[in-house]
Length: 291
Image (cartoon, rainbow, N blue to C red; front, side, top):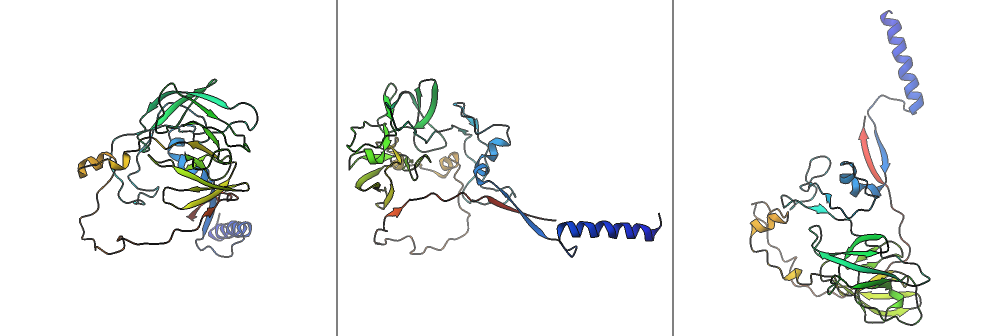
């Protein structure tokens, strides 16, 4: 094939490619593709061949990132080192049928979890076992109940029981509160924290957070009665920078840091109650690549 015929063939191929992609030049361009954000936090398990959609009580290997992202650059400062950890699948969704008797489960054990400040409990009901966040006085052998029925008269709930917030009496201390019905507990899950049910207006309930701010949620949102376990966690004294490294806390750089009055004492009014009505649709994560 002569040089002129080869040049003509290449030009024809390029013309067809440009017509198919609707580009008029051969300049480099950037395209975007979307990936569901629901899998972003599960990629470290998927890469190891673990299916995160299948629940298991077996502790899973939890590789460390050192605060670095997929590009090898530091995304989160102050992260590095630390003892090896294994991840336990904690079930934050205390769901139960809205009609019929409540679901009764027995606490089998209360264990330490290296991936969170609170202790976790192994509970069994029927043929299923799972991890949940342990309450302050939870111990092996206790029976906990879960009911999804919203009652007109307040129920008499024991610590560790889970009910819709609309069924609990005023002044009840709760943890693992749902923002939206059916999403699972997301509020007051750290060690020693709890929220307090202060008032009910119609089908909405107001809870006071540990920060004294109030939130407004539906009366169908599930909540667990009591405080979270390990209440003395905030009183623990680390004592040395070397011990902090065991927890994966990396020290700051040796550069001089200016001391400002930003972190000084400030008296600010409490913000108005935050209302949770309709959950936002999850937006897919966008990744860019250049060719």
